[in-house]
Length: 283
Image 1: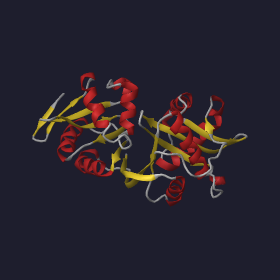
Image 2: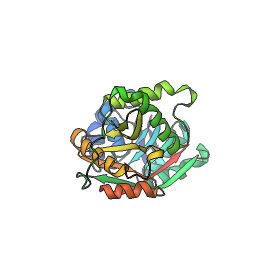
Image 3: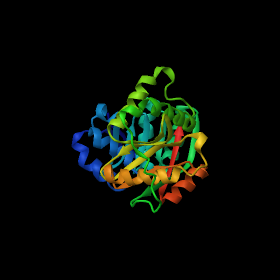
Image 4: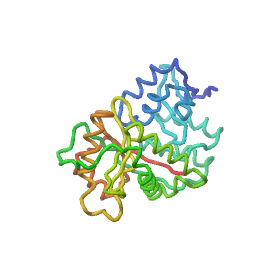
């Protein structure tokens, strides 16, 4: 389906569009890491990508993208592109649990959709996007390592605790426990889960949720609440940066809520510097 309007046209993308898609994503590998990771893993096949990739076209060709899956993620969208995307999304209704990406694009797209999609559960209007292209100057915590299958029984509860605290909803509600455990197991198998454990206790954990050849994006950074304030997070993150830069991607990124002063201080001490600004709308 193609939508033609004064603002250009929108259609689902296919394999023939891959070179143009990759050119857009490579314009900013850190900002576009999530969508680049999906394309890297599944081409432009919606089933393999876990979502549909829409393209906005002008007389010059492909100008911007919108990933439509569990997350709605705009890429390089201007006013015309966002209006064209919004026209299509108003017709289809909301199927995503969040809109996330570059701050201006996310908030403007949401303004165009809010009257049809209803109230958002939460809007996180300012989330600094941070990145590192070198190892940290801090001494890394050598107890941090890539997670193994035998960690799963204690790792999954830590992931559930972190997700629930961060998002406000447990990821295992509605009978989703097995699916969530399978997702964590997949990250472990891919070498994208990291842990520091002491006996049967997870002290620190984090995952790389998205990765391309140029950049990866860390998520789910968590320290056991009973151990916070001990200076665990910064050396652990320094170790994670060192490991991921050698095994996954040369640039390590993440985004953080602006009000999370403790996390921002940790990332600053590790050596992360601001690359951009994200926002998230949660439903």
